[in-house]
Length: 231
Image (cartoon, rainbow, N blue to C red; front, side, top):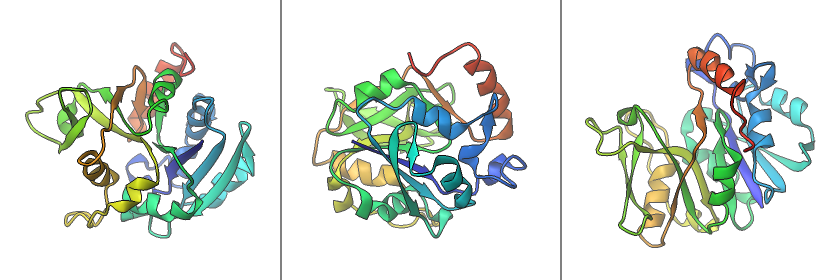
């Protein structure tokens, strides 16, 4: 099984930490974010597809052709601000069958990811104390995805999308137009369309640590001294 890691962005909100390195190589307790992500992948994942852009040569040098025992394929996203749907489209030719897609600047617990990949399709969610700042996950009675609510205020629930999904090649049957505000093409828009035709279960992670700003680095470093992503 493949894991597609979206790591092309410039990480402008993380400056100055990203002035000279890609966000996925920013260090937490002297280890790059990417190392934590790959180390905690489910055992089913044998291959990595890394979508790179900003300072991507550093990612190539860091990972090589085999990273943590997994084969690596690199895909270039020429326009890193085009969004996650565009990033996945760039990787389309390298993708075969079911795959896991993760953000290159978030940490995920292995146990939850392992549950997620047991499904053919899956939305990977987590509870948030600030759901109004993210995409809230609205489920049907059977626990599958109904739709996403973008940054609702007030938020009707605390369950939010982490940007991680289990998908297969069916996702490429759907399209999304660029957001008129930002020009980005958002992957959750395509997933929501997919969920109108197929049942897409929702798995809730016990451990999810998004890293968006320099202050998050300090917080997550403290957490990682007490918590393991591997159990």
